[in-house]
Image (cartoon, rainbow, N blue to C red; front, side, top):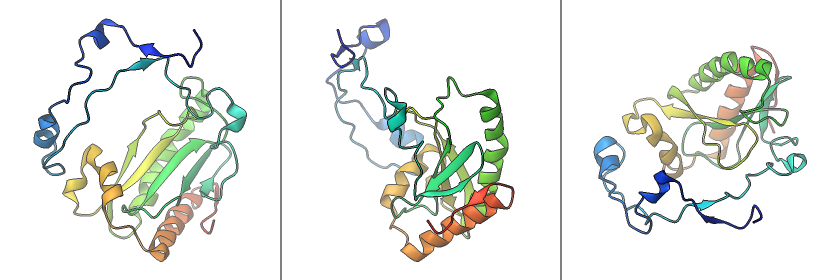
Length: 203
C-alpha cells in the first residue's frame, strides 16, 4: 500500500463515530452564544488514512514558508512574521514561522526558546494598532508541515470575538481599506523592529 492509497481509520476511537451522520451543533451555539446563533454541521465524513502529505512535508525544498516572500513584514536570524495576503476583516492577521524548515517535533531548542519572547513582542506590537484590545495566538498544523502559528487581533469591545470564535469573524467582517491595512502592517513591523530584527513594512 502506498502513502496515497487510503482506507478508513480503524482504531477503537474511530469505530465509535457516527460516520455519515449530521452532528448536533447545539454545543457550539450554547457554548459560544456570543458568536453562534445557528449552525448546521456537514455530515461526518469517513476519516481516511494515511493522510495526504502537508505542504513541504515530502519535499522541504518546495516549502513556501522557506522561500523569500513579499508578505514578510519582519524577520530576525531565527523567526519571521508574514501578513497582508488578503484584505482582512480583523485589524491584523499574521503568520509566525521559523526562517529555516523546522517542524515542531524537530525544531532546535534555541529556536523554540526564542519564540517565547517573540510571542510577547508580537502581542505588544499588535495591541499598538489603534482599536485593538487583545492579540490571540493559534496553531492548527494542517496546511503546512513547516512550523507556523497565527496571531489575530481582537478589536476593542468585540466580546463576540472572544476565544476561538475570533478566527471565524475575520472572514465575515467587512475587509479593511487597503490604506488602513497597510498602516496596520507598518505599525506591527516597526514595533517588532524596535526590539531587534528588520522590518519590511512596505512589501
